[in-house]
Image 1 (cartoon, chains in turn red, cyan):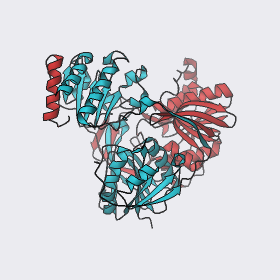
Image 2 (tube, helix red, strand yellow):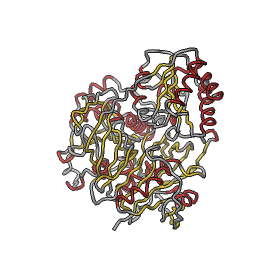
Image 3 (cartoon, rainbow over the protein chains, first blue to last red):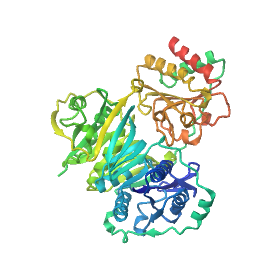
Image 4 (tube, rainbow over the protein chains, first blue to last red):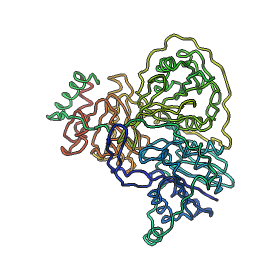
Length: 262
Length: 313
């Protein structure tokens, strides 16, 4: 089975974000692979180990994004591709990604490389858009199932589980298809030290839009951030003292009288 | 010429989703400001008849479990409440029609004749205001509690039945809904009672469930139980309840953080709550910086006392 995994480098959870003015944001340069993508990589490797085939990891991003591909190599991916082009710079920035443009790039990559199955995370942990996977499936006109918690390959098809609105559904999906990974799908492995060292020396090749025969007008800001704020999340606390019963009664009174919250 | 604003109206177990009603309530106003006519696409008969009380033109998609379906040709804007279905359908519609998609918006309004949306960015650390490329369909979902639900204006809309286009290659083999899962989703709670490690065991969440039940009786509102990442990772609670980054972002009127220390990834999911109450035995827990009211104490003593106080108030 030929498996493609789409991965994204996102700012680390601890990375500081600062608004320089109301139209520019600065993000501290600390990055990691988006959490849900690590689940997609792990599932791809497990499918390969069980059924044979290849795992190819793909990311769209500037040079620094190559780091997530090194991680994929260290974990056991057979090959990796980083897609970048000056034309992508306005739609894939440190703070925002235009989903449709990236989906067009990834659909072109998938056609170029060929595939039986595409795996990706259910959403990226920076924009939480959950859009690129579905859009890529739409452009490729292939079936997709989002937020899967179990994957089982069968001859020519794949059987997945998905929790939705409190119901667990079992779905059969014909290949080629796209699946997005939900928390609980698996526990990702840690890479072996030797493989990390080897991956650190690997040359990460970049492909540009011309190599993928993508027309420049396919890359467009369909949705554009025009201003930003970094809200202060701190609140001013009123600590309510006293024994549990007294404090609880006082809390109820204040929620009711000061906030009309009860 | 596309001249309609379509609202996707869903129901979950017979009743229309509260977020669908919120969006329907706002649809006519937004459509009017854009010079469009409000219409609806309903995913079943109940949703269709409810939608027809708000807008004059309703497409009832039969067998809508099998969408994707094409965007109606006269759609200038498609609006939905955030939901799992919206997350599958909306990006699909946008990609298939080369439209503009923005999901899970926290504000949506018309400025100078065009739609403008707000949405968190960078995992909730920042918020952005977004503009859409002109002359393309705009496909947007908004989160629960962004718009206020209002009673129907007394319209009696026309309902047209239409078969959804089946998604090829997908077959749902089974769908099991556990009886216990007919609970309020954490994103749709007017009040959310969330617990963390401070509850000390999975079994002790019973005290939170009891508080939630008491609050639901006392207020008549929707009350949901939530959980911190730590207790979801420890498998005390299901992932559906996880609040924060990599879980769900909530905006209730009242949020209780019980035995939750207040790591940044949790705070990023609760900053739109109107009132936050923190209960924690550690007076130095970061959660107290992000709460409006706090009680320093053992959750297992404070929560039963709180339940009693609400019952007797």
